[in-house]
Length: 199
Ligand code: GDP
Image (cartoon, rainbow, N blue to C red):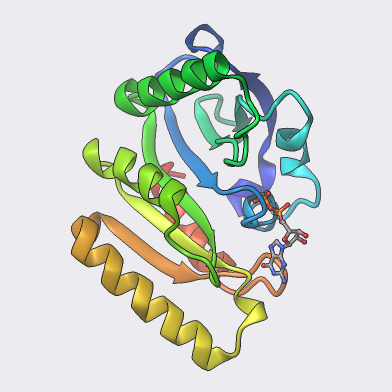
């Protein structure tokens, strides 16, 4: 698993702090508490990799993890939402940064959107998917915490989300069930990320 080598590189809160835009990167988005950190940790077979993203003050930064030995392949942890308490001007700065990142970052090869299988496709998730689709980037949705549902309910949720995604975004968005807890779907998700990173 090449992702097992992932390690923290830096956290950027503006364009100047981004690593050089010459490589390959996959961004991870998800509402707070959706299970994004657990998903990143499971993909990378590490217990605390994404903990750094949750450090207070890092909530409005893009956290970059590099994948040695290459120096130009990154996983990028986008902050979860749930920062309604953030002052207006910071909010605007952040929105502009995110718009710019999605709009212009050449290295960005794909987006993973992590959603709680019991509450998929909230406004935030749709906004993120729109960012990707508008740029012609592929996106992959993880319906995580699948272990909380029966097999039958998992299948129903998957079909419903797949149907909705394909009617809204066509075939540039794929979806699977996932669990950071039981490790369901980890191999499948890892294969998508590794392909986008050309690992
Ligand atoms: P984040 O805020 O999106 O990074 O979410 P976390 O990964 O920190 O997870 C939020 C909460 O959901 C934690 O209490 C996790 O233990 C729990 N959680 C995350 N993934 C799963 C999963 O696949 N199954 C179950 N049952 N719980 C999960």
